[in-house]
Length: 335
Image 1: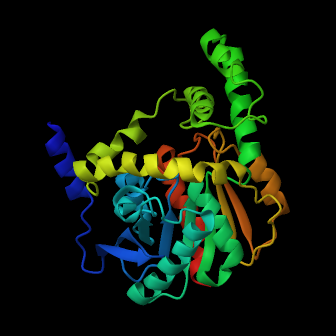
Image 2: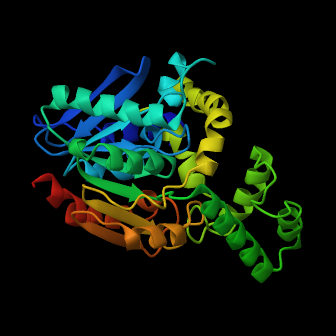
Image 3: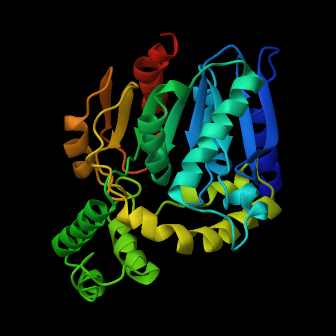
């Protein structure tokens, strides 16, 4: 089977043929920047689940074909490429606002647009990784827009996050007797420390943390994730080139906000809060999230552990992911 045939099969598998389905895309202006939106679901009467992707600038749509089909049986799933990401990169220049607050305001405007397009009052919000920063801020500021918030690979404290990632890398390399890894990690000095956290320093730390299963549990590599974009029915070859372009534009301008982010003192919420946590996640380690979530007050709160996942539980344990959404999240949409 050629790659072209493989892509054609995947595209055909992702067709939703029943009359009640919705499968459409749109370009929506949010905060003055045109952003690409995908809406898919088996039944347009289902509640809306808005996915806020990670990265920064790693759109969820190109890899969604791996895990999203089961979710579409129960929710109308909305993915959007954030400003400066993927198919939304075209409207961004040196003067474009890439502040965290602007990203959050974009979600507010997108929810308002979805209200008119889909006839809903509120949506569920799923924030993954970097997207969980935006998600938890929106849940705090605008609970009136949401029937629930789901954090997946939640990031709650940038400084604590980096310290945990580094400790995991050193601990694992020591147990493995990996002299190369230890030499590179020790060369970073006091990490994260007081020196500037350059991209180069972060890459070294993350490379070894991921080598020891911090991105995908039990795996040194995550080919299934990084290369799945090439088979995506939602992204052409030209579209895929936009991902790297968006990262090169966005990361230098957003990185300091990610590393300095700390919402560990934000514990009062007026919306149901759910956390999906990978037991082996050392991309956004769970220990800071556990400490924070223990103190959170909300109308309801639930934690679901993925014992065989790290940072990508929707890919690593897709069945449990769907069941978790149906059992812990879907009931809030009816209230």
